[in-house]
Image 1 (cartoon, rainbow, N blue to C red):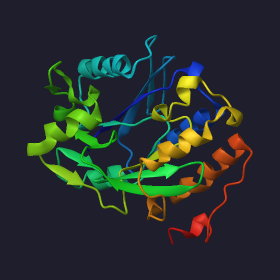
Image 2: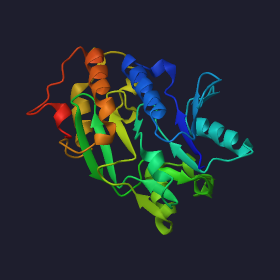
Image 3: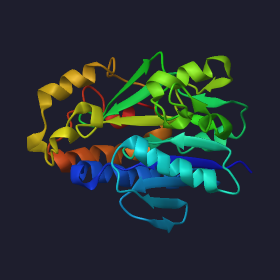
Length: 261
């Protein structure tokens, strides 16, 4: 039976808003909803404990590279290695069906060709084909651990947008069906690259709405795309945002919950 290992580096507690905390809770629920049971996750943060499939590893360091190094050391020491590695951010959602689907396939890397994004402020979805592989793909273990690039870091530790598509250019990459993506990337004011975390914003009133709207434009057209595999989380995503912002999401035309039917 094939084994999958997820690797997640936690957002430092000093940068957490209630929104980010609630997204992490939903991230955990998405993992627990997997229809395939043989997986575990390494969560690198500020505490050390084991809870069922969840292995929390403590790190006093805050950079993602340093935290991924801790995961690398843990995996190196394992007597029995997992078959696959998956990096997953602590505010994103993995498809509940993807592992069950993956075990039936032969690949070096299983990825989304069309990156799928969900904007939590509007309950809108975008899909955009990009020239690089997304942060969350399913690596065959031997490839994820292979030293690569000038610094010879293990592949999974490297910048996904710069290294992975080059490494896998001559290898077997299987792309998931557009209507059944590997994962849903949640775009929110607490997304690191939206710069809200950099200002340590804790509440809706600190949210730079104009800057965020400009940020959203970089993800293509926000409209209707089929994300049926994530239906069970959509109500929670709406609730998380409305509780954080004390604002009702204005859904255009039809109800959001009918977009994907």
